Length: 361
Image 1 (cartoon, rainbow, N blue to C red):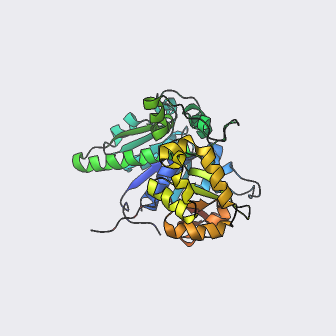
Image 2 (image 1 turned 90 degrees about the horizontal axis):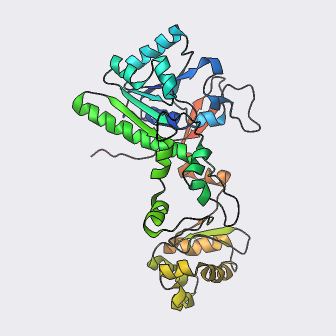
Image 3 (image 1 turned 135 degrees about the horizontal axis):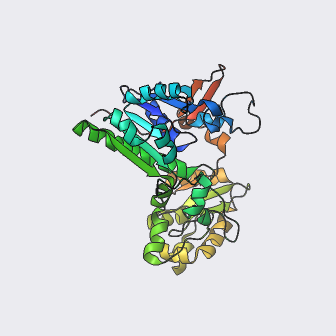
């Protein structure tokens, strides 16, 4: 069931693929009426055809498409057709928010750019996603291209091995979060002024803004991040993996001196605390290999579940490596699954995108 927070909000979504539709679904989850206008001449959003092996080739939807298109009304129009374009304009005239990822030249040609739509509807919030910092740069901007251009791909993977892309289109999702924030600020501003505005975000700038500590490692210390697998450049043992007696892997994320002391006590390895190479985080980062060799010797003596039973109650940050089946066996994860019938009557499923909680004061 939808939340009712935005039950009076009308959203028109012209966007396709992932970032824009994720924003539309966010508002649908919070109760908004979301109309997704798809290109009739191409059988709709391109991701309808992005199917994994085993999916029904005759189905008009894919699992990828379902991931960010819950709770919407779908309208197929040819925006080059004057009648269809007129129908689209009727929806935008009544909308609070329009979400687009048009090329700027296409938007202007169709009369669906911010200036044209806001001239008709001054309260409209026009939310635009582009690929690059310059909105007029119309180069294709698929997620993996941005991962490469923004430095993520160079950092991701194992040392001395080729780059590895992140397995979800994370740059798209980061841009979606940026645009959600911009729209929410614009809605708050409209409450005060009565006027809408244009909100825009680029995938590229969203990616750069998310480099966080890796960016400041370079900007302030001149340290250029390299591929480190799951390890962390500033903390040890953090992201380090150890093979247990049953062949399963355990991950540690020890972020404080107290947690490292607790780890050593749980492992009956107080000698590690007495070693000057391991007594501070800075020392452990410098001597990571020696520390990991010592920890690996200990972790190889018990099975993964045995170690988790020892470490979890003591507050040592650690984890097993779960695959998707294992993730979705957990009750708290199952509670995040949204269902919706497909046009053919089959049941579709995806994960909520709005997972914050609000309690009335």
